[in-house]
Image (cartoon, rainbow, N blue to C red):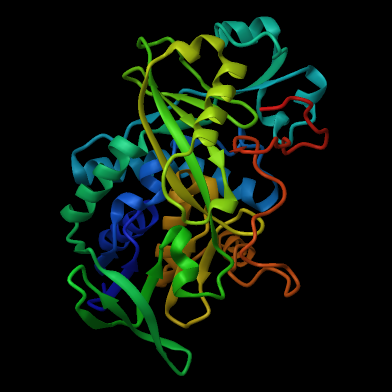
Length: 399
């Protein structure tokens, strides 16, 4: 056990998750948060979908490991908070235009192949264009927006985590390449210097504002929730450009646009909302009649290869847990474990070391243009231009 203070720079999902785990291991933890409701953890759909997303390589491995750890991670949070996190094993259905397209999907081997008849059984009312599908029973969802974030906050309080709200971190202070504190400004404009030798940067899409060398940039996403009779949709539908995530109480979360050109521009747009409506109609026509309940937007923290930045950063003592793009909720459990083990000096496995190395902040080639969105988007992103699936065969379907 150490009495040394660990500063968590960012009070979103990743920051709270790491703060909670470090506190469980006896560390003194303080979370610095400028405006917590802007965090991606509050606006994401909460899908746990490494297979439905069609992830590849080391990112798929990271997602699968995290998926395995999520039940135990959630149990810890619920035990400390006394509140439910909203974890549900609903399974996720990915529809395709035909069997050939289905069989070319990167993660097809992990799912159950569906023909049109079976697809209709799982998703009554699905549009006739979809003739095949994959069911990933192992994938699921968690109600991050209404339950997980609240439960995590309570669990942190229960474990003695300190919070400083309305505090913006202006600068990271270093001496001889080592962290020795951060400069902050509170909501009243007062400047302060907090000394520390260990901190974790969990500032999401804003991470590069603090460390410009980090290749993290915002990708804006707009979303909407619909109200429907409970049980009308039992499985998550993960279509190209649009996904529908049914909650237990009948609310259906629909997302999401992908707008890298928007930067940090806030607000809803007619084009974005129209794109969501078109995606809904293309997947489940009857859903266009379900009344909208809420509309919102957020900023995904993206990197050139859409993988996170994990491990020690460019300054000794400053750890990174940012750049998770659209998989922050999925990857929270494994990120928490990897970072907590490294920070506390816990013996790490060869697999953990390899993953931390694979997702180093400086893994990109020097000639790679940073702070620019990748040309290819994940299957579930709905940009304002047609997108392609992450498969070897391009889709002819316009989302």
